[in-house]
Length: 483
Image (cartoon, rainbow, N blue to C red; front, side, top):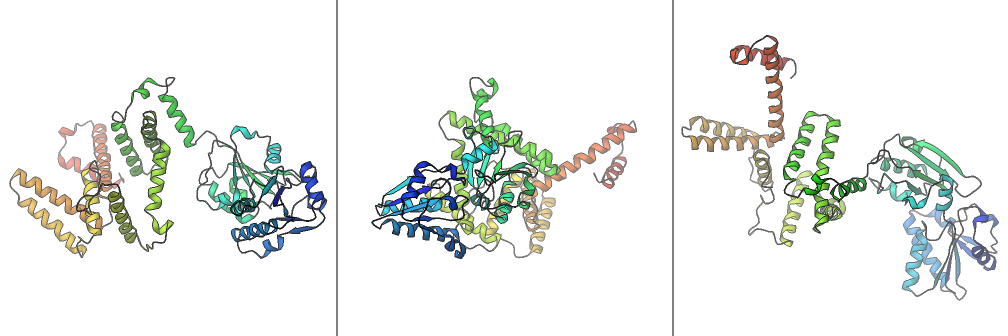
């Protein structure tokens, strides 16, 4: 006979299909994944078995589900076969059914699925939502184990089986990485039963409500739209014949100056400490990335999915201490592993130099100060390093003396470069980013100099007519004012 897997529906006996009712009436015995289902007491079952005792003793669900699946397969290999009944629809959120079907295929045991109304249809009715509007459906437990939700925030989502306060708490933390904490969500209790109830709560209060094995969560879309997919659609529309002539005209090459400009504006926002400005500038920088990806799509070069897949694979590959069995107890070991993996990648791609250099991979387009910092750091990782801070400071003084002693222009330029290089190395020892430090210093100089200009204007003086002592006094005033 094999295995009959039967769906019991969401809980109301009237929602059980006629076919399911007939099979249950005719079966000598029925095995239930759980008897803790609202309509079990009213089912026409002669002999009922359930795995609830296994649930109560189980240490984890994965092992339990595998055990149930193997048991059902054994029963199905009997001459009389087995009827296995599960809540809802057998192929909606039923891991044991998936495992049973995999085992049955491997051992040539026939399986028949008897459809049942899933929890989804009563949820849609309770919420007055059309599933074809793009609703997303996930298992709440899977979401609880993630750090970021795999959801498009512009589209409504259903999270099933929010069965405990612990799961609700973890789901809340995951969703908070994408949705505002005040975003209103809806708890749906006992959908498809006489006890059905909707409860609207802000996301931050999700884990403060009572939930059970018949609770699901509905997450409405955010407003205004903020998904990556919506962003890509806007860019694709701008590049379409119905879009913007300027956007259609752009190429990878023509966008280069904008990419550089937006990058530096992000750095400026970081320096300012203005998070609202940083948010806007990051969006402008992301625009450049999406722009380049759309151009690549149109020319058949690559897609945004290719870009994201590549960087995701690289992150996982270069963090074997997170997604593998490599140990890295400190940042230095992480750096060492990272460099080794990069060398292996270059060799696999045929890009390795002969012999490979520890300095490979520093972008040639980096500003000189940032490039020098990166090169010094890479050299230090392989042991080309001073032993003491005092030695680094002594080197700076030595290079300064050599600069002061230089008399020719070419020699001064070279010695000045040596001094800058030694200062970059000192910055590394002090854990200071020299590029950021100089940029911040330049901004400080601009603020104080503009203060001098403003004060001179208020006094009716031109800067050219002021003495250095007068300007220096104003400079010190600006300094005292915290500028």
